[in-house]
Image (cartoon, rainbow, N blue to C red):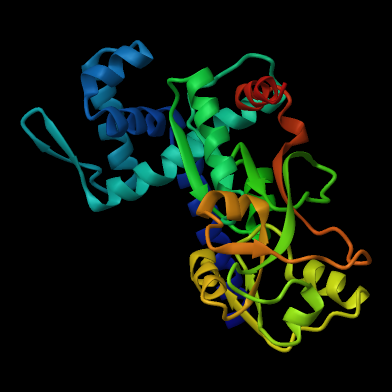
Length: 310
C-alpha cells in the first residue's frame, strides 16, 4: 500500500471516528447542562425539565464522560463551572437561543423564552433606538433584552443569522429577506458660531473648514454629492466620531458644522446659528430605520415589534 493511500485511509478512519463521537452526544444532556449552568442549581433545573435531581446529575456525569472533560467543580452543593464548562455554557446558551428563534420562524407556537437581541448602529439614531428599546421593554416586559452595538457592514448578517431579532440603522438594507421601516427623519443643516459674521453657506465654506461627524446618520458621500451639485467646495474638512468635539469647534468659530437637527436637539445648539442655504442645494436627511427579517413573521419578538410600530 502506498504512503498516500495509507494517509487517505487514516484520514477516512479519523473522520469516521469523529462522526461517531459527535453523533453519540445526547443533546438533551447538553440542554440539561445548560440549564444547570444558567440556574446554578441541579434542583431548579430538574424542576424545569420535570426530572429528578439525581437523574439530571447522572445525565451531566454521562456528558462529562462522553466529552472527556470536567464541566463542574463540585464543592458540596455548590457548582462552579470549570474553564471547559464555561466555554460549553457560552456556546450552548447561544445555540439554544438561536434554536428557539428558528422554531418560531417555522411554527406559530411561541417559545418566547430567549433574550430579545437588539442591534444598534452607533450614530445620531442611538437616542431614538434606546427610546424604542425602552418602549419595547415597558410594553412587553419583563423580558431579557440584549442591546448590542454593531456596524452597517455587520447588522445585515447578524439579523439574518438570528444573532439579533431586529436592529436600528441609518439606512435601509436592500436585502430582499429583510424588512425596513423609516421611523425617524431629521434634516441636516449647516451651523456656525452665533458670533460669526457669516450668513451664507458659500462664503463660509470658502473661509472655514467643513466639520463632519462620522457618527451622525447620514453618509459623507451624500453630503459631498449635494455640495458638488451646488458647486460648493469646502476649503478643508475636519472629521470626528464625536459630535461634541465638532460642536465645540463650531462655537469657537473654527468651522462650519454639518449636523442633523436631531444632534443639535440632543446636544444643545446653544451658541450656534444655522446658515442660509442656497436654493439649489438638495435636501440632506439623517434617517433612522428599523430592520427585521421577513421570515420571522411568527417570531414573538417581531410580532411584538410590529405592535409597537402601530
